[in-house]
Length: 332
Image (tube, rainbow, N blue to C red):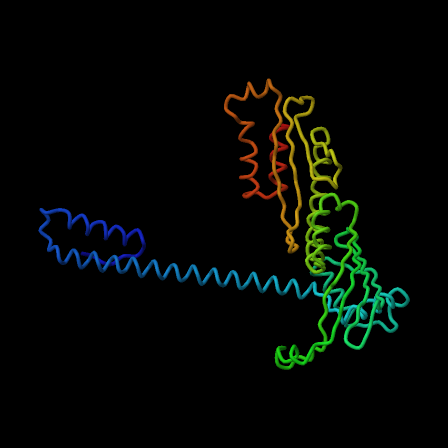
C-alpha cells in the first residue's frame, strides 16, 4: 500500500481503503500487511493531529502574549506616575506664563507623546496636600483636558505611604521605590455630548476609583464619537431628502426612506459602549419598519431579511460603506 500521504484528507483516505480491504474476504491482499499499513497510517494521523494541536496551542499562547504586551504598553503610556503629577502641574502652569522659561522639557515631551498616542491632551492640573504625617501623605489632584474635542475633568485623592522593610525586600533587584500610592476617591466630569451614552461607565469608574481605565476608555470613545459624528453629518449632507438625524449628529440614530414615500422606514442605531476595563465597542444594527401594506406585498421577505444582510455587509465592507450602500439601494 502506498503510504505517501500529504494531507489529512489523503491520510483518512488510506485508512478507509485499508479498512475496506479488511472487510472484504475476497481480497487476496495479505490481511496482516493491510493491518500493519492501517495501524501505521492511524499512527501518522494521530501524530499529525498532535502536531497541529501543538501548533495551534503555541499560536494561541503567542497571540495571548502579544495581547498582554499591547495591554501593558497602553497602560504604561496612559500611566500617570503619582510622583510626576506635581511636575505635570508645574509644567502646565509655567507653560501658561512662559513657553520658554523654566519649563520641564522631559514632562513636556511626555505629555506630547501621550497626546500623540492616546489622544489625551491635558490643559490644566492642580494639586494640594490634604493630610500629611511621617508615614503617609494624601493629595487632592485635579486634571483637565480633552480627547478628540471632548472635554473632561477628574478630581481624585491619592494616598501615598512609605514602604515597609518587608515590602522593599519583595521589590525587583535594583528598584529604588520608596513609596506606594493608590487612588482613594475619584470624581469625573465629561462633555455633555457624551454623558447620555457614557454615564454608566463613568459612575462605575468613580465607584471603583478606576482612573486609568477611565482615561483609556474615554480616549477610545472620543475617537469613535468623532468618527460617528462626521459619518452622520456626511450622510445627511449627501442624501438631504432621504436621511434624518432625530438626535442630531451627536446622537446614535440615522433614519432614511425613499423620498416622497414613507411606507418603509429604515433605522440604523450606532451605539458606542465601554467595558469596565476601558475597551470601546461599537454596536450597529438596522431596523426596518414597513407599513402593513408593504408587509403584505413583501412575499419574498426581503424587508425581513434586511437586518441580517446588513450585519453580513458590515463584516465585509465596514460601517460607512454598508450604510451608504443601503441608503443608495433604498433611494434610487
